[in-house]
Amino acid sequence: MSDQAGDQAFRRQNGTKGRWHEMTYGGALSFLRRNYSRDLSGVDVAVTGVPFDNAVTFRPGCRLGPQAIRAASVQLAELKAFPFGFDPFERLSVVDYGDVHLDPHHPETIRPAIQAHAAEIIANGTKLLTLGGDHSIAYPLLKAHAEKYGPVALIQFDAHCDTWDDDGVAMDHGTMFLRAAREGIIDTSKSTQVGLRTYNDEDFGFEILTSPWIHRNGIDAAIEIARERAGDAPVYISFDVDGMDPAFAPGTGTPVPGGLASWQALEFIRGMAGLNLIGMDVVEVSPPYDHAEITAIAAATIAHDWLCLLAKAAGEQENPVGRI
Image (cartoon, rainbow, N blue to C red; front, side, top):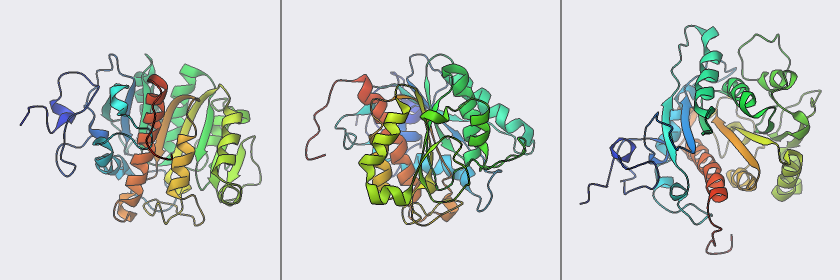
């Protein structure tokens, strides 16, 4: 057997593009079997985990999310990407950067640590894909991106608006987007919230596409609105898995019935092709409440498809087989 087989997460020494054969049920787990590396020379995208859930308001466990998403990504690493019809890693250099180191016993250090970690990665042009962790981690991630790109257009998938008011100090996962909007980190006139099914008396300038509206009007109409609002602005996608219905994402801390199906979420992500995509997080996967890795598999696929959008922009036009 060739030496180029198995454990590529740490064995590959010939660059960060391409891939070789792995047993899906064995080997060292990294996201999509990418090299573990903190050398970002020539790297297009770094994947990192933020194993933090001290800010949850109901069920904990999403500190274990990055591990679960990595484990759930194994099948996505063996075949050409569907429906794109290419191997994204022939077009993109992607590494698994490992997890940010946090000290949860000193909560005042959490946000600065996440922001510094993100800023270091994106400083020289490497894009960042983050696996959470609870949704509070999006605030320092957005701060780091806004420092580089200016105010961002946020496309937020969520059951909750996360724009409830607070004292500006509390660490929770339901107020950070209002705080970011007030600080000018988010340009709400270009931002869209997708899948909401909890109520707030104000929209704070966001376009809100509730799950019932999407179910009635269709995913294409929702995609068109989000694309038109974003325009050519730098787009950051924050995907809380509770934006999906608990039937498709049971492994999360704050499940709400009536949400998006996994196919709707994937269609929406794929519909963001061609936008100025600068970063993404996928958050709130809580393995203790997951069943048969349903939630983790969906989260891994969503993150994978965002990478494919970047690969699509970087490569030649593909011609997928079948009616896509």
